[in-house]
Image (cartoon, rainbow, N blue to C red; front, side):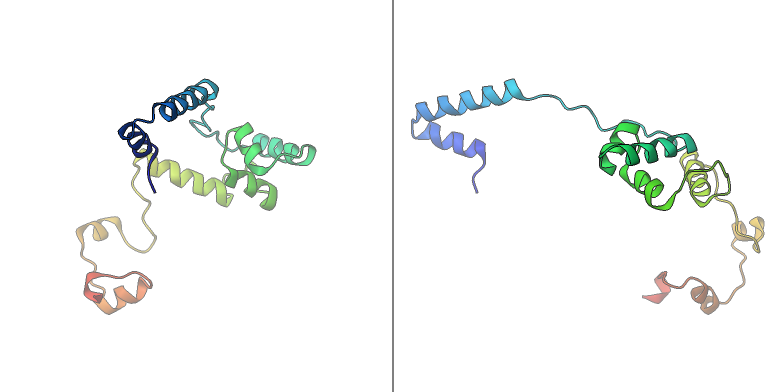
Length: 150
């Protein structure tokens, strides 16, 4: 398949000036009718119960698709789906799964250290003095390969 540039070069090689002129007129027409579409969204809005209620209201009162609603309110389509199908974000509960996940993601973005799991002291884990047998360590990480497994 030839590219448009290759096609244009072939027209020049064969001296087809009328075809080149027509091609240029088509380019000019395309440039004149081309518009710059607005960007989808630069930064997403924080999901709040008020925003979730607005999403539900738009969904109930208009014939808009989830994608159109997402574009209008400034969130992604997945968030709109979560609100409509699962009723997420309708409360201010800080212990709701979606709020906990959001807070963890924000902590990762800030570079906060990960919280330690209960059962292992931080100093012992940091020093690498875990005396668990290799077979036990592998069994506790099912589904994860290590170099010793290969």
